[in-house]
Length: 297
Image (cartoon, rainbow, N blue to C red; front, side):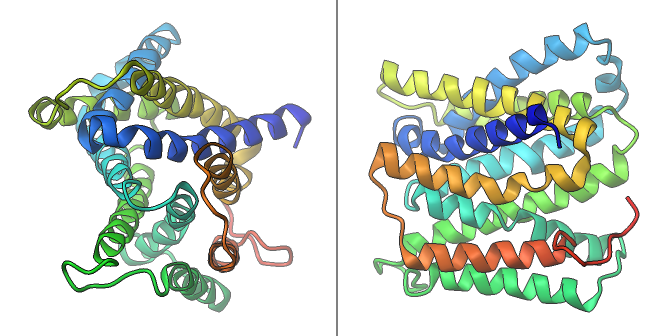
């Protein structure tokens, strides 16, 4: 990996880690749905002209139906769920739960696409869910009205979001593998903006969000979404999917750092233990550890 690629990888992790900081800060002012409408609309406003300038706009018309599905499952639904979760969870905890996305992606691939797993990969999946259990142990309560019930709902929202990411990744692989990734990125953000517009107008915040909240929403849409997508797909082209997947391990590091610096969020031993087990399980499930057999492609 060149220095430029390493810089892009770290910048991408910092941006996606910062998205959890902005969500924590700005969701109370906008609400989950209106904020995500602003986020994806801003990203689409940047990505669509860039795609047409690069001559890839025709793919949007040809593949609009699967792009609409990806927009729902990879942006609209998970973004709203994660926004809701950050009303209760810290940026660090939410980002660690978000790091289970590769585990869901692998599990869906086994069930849906018939992908075969070895013993070490099954062990990785089990370790990943053990890490989630460690992370939320003693914090959740399924009794309505209890202090831990809101935490349980937020954890469930995070896991449902990552499940949606997993389904979207496999759907994209199955239906859009021949489509340029930049078209998938632009089309999915535009689709998400269209899907979320009616509920966003219905639940638009009153009174209007203050100027500081709008600045944070702009940063979320332009930097953490549009710019982040451009970096991600450039990394895919330059270093491949396997190395680009390592950003999964870096996002919680930056999210926890930003949360501690700007929101005074605490880093606990329970968070460290849960994150370590989740990361170890993900590495096993994705064949990222040294000495593991690598599958073609």
